[in-house]
Amino acid sequence: MMKIFITVLLFLTTAFLAESAKILGVFPVPGRSHYILGSTLLKALAEKGHDVTMISCFGEKDPPKNGTYRDVVISGLLEAMQDHVNKDQVNMFDREASNPFTTSVFIGFMMPQVMEMILKHENVQKLINSDEKFDVVIVEQFLNDAQKALSTHFGAPLITFNPVGPNYWINPLVGNPSPLSYVANVMLDYTAPMTFSQRLMNTLLSVFNELFYNLYMFPAQNKMLKKYLPNGLDLYDVLYNTSIVLMNSHSSINQAVPYVPNMIEIGGFHVKPPKKLPNDLQEFLDNSKNGVIYFSMGSNLKSVELPIDKRNAILSTFSKLKENVLWKWEDDSLPGQPPNVKLSKWLPQQDILAHPNVKLFITHGGYLSTTETIYHGVPILAIPIFGDQKMNALTAANSGYGLVVPYSQLTEEKLTSTIHEILKNNKYRENAKLRSKLFHDRLVSPMDTAIYWVEYVIRHKGAPYLRVAGLDLPWYQYHLLDVIAFIVLIGSCFLFTFYYLTKIICKKLFFKNSRKLKKQ
Image (cartoon, rainbow, N blue to C red; front, side):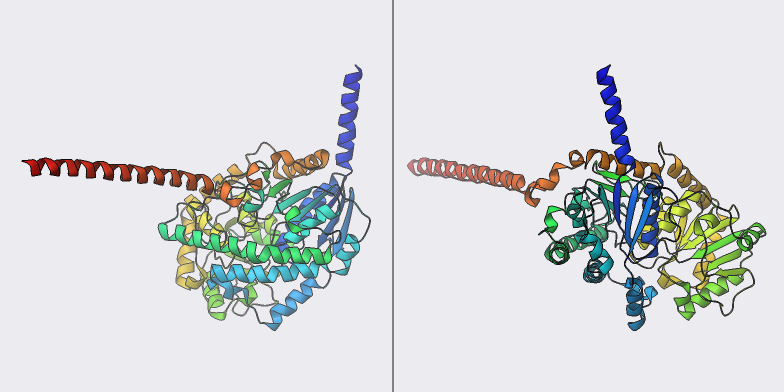
């Protein structure tokens, strides 16, 4: 009886500790889509009664009503980034033709500078130099490995949040196998099966990234860490010490690939049940008898920055459609706007995709947009520009729930024919609905999965037993190069000995036969 009482008491105590934990979330990337993911997770944890602190470039306008939610805002960074864009007259659509090698280098040099601005920010430094302690630290994985040391600094286990599927940013850090024969680099628009030339390019880019990260990125992050965090921390003490990785992925969205035990899929956790639409949008969608095409290029790309020739091709296409078009357009007016097109600077995307009259989603192929369209079972026409957008778009096409119009091939004829193909061929909608069923067919919801594993790490003060042994092996042992070298050496010795003995025997036989011939 006493044993049962103690067991129950321990369970209740553990549960209480998990419910009142102090959690630090580090989602510093100055991009709205990244913040949406981080804030959704951290607000849900606060709603569960946790004491949450969130480091980001955005302040939360709608904090949760339960628990405690505190913002540490990196003020000024968004403005600084925008000034940089305006100064250099950067148009994101120009990145469509960028080389994956130069893109990797560009991001690799830019992000450490951005992350240093974050670490030295007065609000972040104030938190670092406080006496606070946390029960767990959740850090978004986005070329910001130095910030993982905040977990060690605050005496807490580390949870890494990966905003997309498995890639070269996270796989090596948890020992996750990533066969180059069928797992493409996120910067390439390849999917399995790959051709020989694609596998060659995939291998070259992956080797290049591995060298670039180990020779430049990690040393630069380590230098930054030592500069802005006290106590003599070292990057390599935390780099491979993640308790779990929350993967914003799912087999209904991503290609099926290997996962080590501490990689937990929570793809789609940010998607919420649809809410009531504003009256003007509700009326527009309800009264569109021929259906609606929803057009948005996401939060980073702006339709207003489209070159005039591309914009005119889109306008000419839309003007000839019988369907109405809802377009996320970031200006007050659109020259040549057709009567069947409704504009808005901001649109509640998830709620719009849930409306039964939406027949097609024209998108840049961003990961969040792809996830949301699968959730609601709406086919897509993707016009990808950069990053993982091309891979997401190609995956949609290969899975049969969408088609791709490369930005370089965006003309009125190409866009019109592709729209008509998707709208008239019912297979795209059927495949989108099938993907939606696969997405929803889970034992536990993705958000509940995420919360469970965060609390699991808190309860057990980490999860070292989920860490694979491959992380402790030198690279040559991990790839069995020493074993291969040994086998080659032994095999070579055997072949050499066999060759040498055969040569001696042949010489003796030849000499013996020669003597017999001379005697005759």
